[in-house]
Every structure is written in structure tokens, then in C-alpha cells.
Image 1 (cartoon, one colour):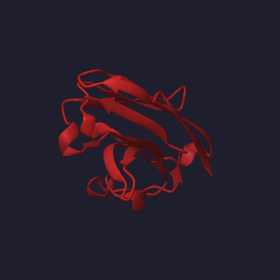
Image 2: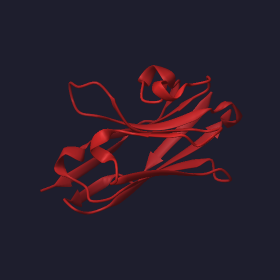
Image 3: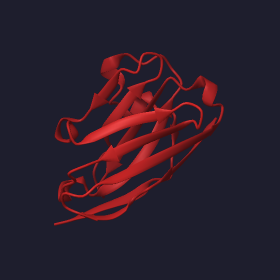
Image 4: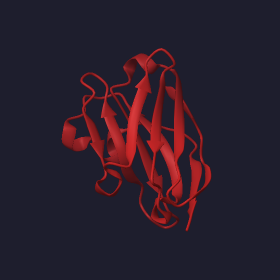
Length: 127
């Protein structure tokens, strides 16, 4: 089992930036992919960004391409989501997730690919 702890959420004005962190512990050697999802009340979780560990192939949701960037620190077992030029529609609870299978690129954006989830961190962008 992998434990995930997110941090870095908060309130920011439109056009501003935030950096989310996701620290992993436990059976991290089995991790093959990590991702950030976001969710609004009553809606399904949407994958914002994901990375496949072995070859660093990434996925970005269309609305965040060019604004969000995912990076990782292997020594710290931490994944970061740098969010720039933020918009009110980025407001959501953001969740970090890890998967231990052998995901193909087209599956990186699917919630079913991931088997460990963090508790979520609120991100609010004011207009």
C-alpha cells in the first residue's frame, strides 16, 4: 500500500500560481504512474496531469496545457504540480494518485488506472 499526502492548496487570484506537492510513502517501489485529478461537487474526478514512471511520458488535460507542469523528485518520492496563469474554472479539490500496474499511455487519464489516493487539497481561484 502507498500512502499519499498532498499539500500546497489554497486561495489565489486569477492569473496567479500555486504549486501542489504529493509525498508518497510505503510500498513506493511498485509505483508505475502518478497523477493529479480534480473534482467539483457532484462531478466525476477529472485527470489534470499524469506521468508514467519508467519513461516519463506525460498527459495533460487540454484546458491546462501550457499552464500546468508536472515534475517529480525521486529522492523525496514527491510529485509536484506547478499551476500558472490560474483561472476560476481551476477551482476544485485536487487529488494525487498512484498506480502499480503497467499503464498504456491512453490509460494515464483514467481513474481506474490508480489504486492509491490522497485525501485531497482545496484549490480556489478568485476572479
